[in-house]
Length: 176
Image (cartoon, rainbow, N blue to C red; front, top):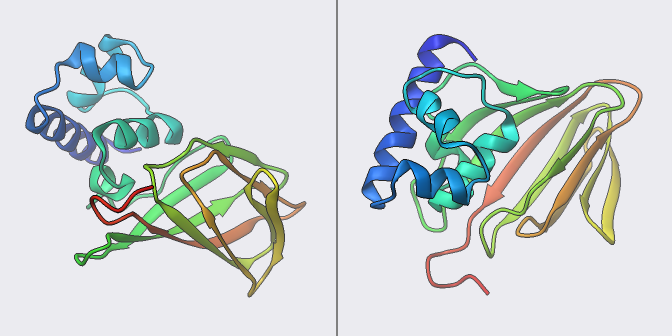
């Protein structure tokens, strides 16, 4: 992630943390990270992983896009890159992402907030995606929707996979 993007992420993190009345120690503990690492992120330093950003978003109870908007570069690590395409302004909140997975990449994603669903449409390549017991193998043009409030996986085939990811967050007060 470039310096302007890190600065944007840091400002968003700090603002959301303060809005919720959380200390650095509280949020760091909730997200399973060192307070010093969170402090560095808020200052626009460090090199956060996708998992770290997702965990922070979940602990702050905001869509991932709220932390990365308006970052224009892909955010990624370990063979996966994600770029926010757009965030809806209606209820429920809907985010759209472009995602790219390197050949033979396995990404194990943590559960999103309660009631969240995810739809994956493969643009190119092949991908296995879903939750335990609900994993589908998809090729270009195929889609799969699953409950993303459970841990889930993305496993690319032997070529690059490009995806459109749509995340629908539960309406406030409607999560199971």
